[in-house]
Length: 62
Image 1 (tube, one colour):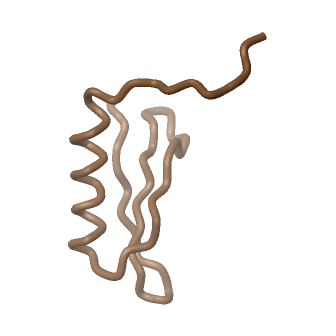
Image 2: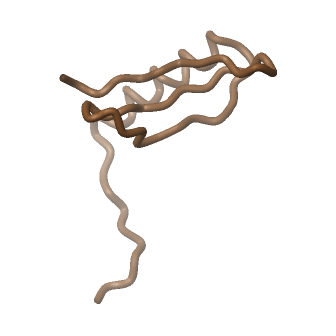
């Protein structure tokens, strides 16, 4: 099973999404959005940029 985006609405009325791995672990969460459409656009943006994203490792070398 693939990971999934879970879109939720808070009690205050804002929307946010989480990226959930196939094992159920949350691996990323979004900022708050004022509309559902804006949150869906955020999901689309993550999908588009993550396909070719590189890892920029800023940790010190051991």
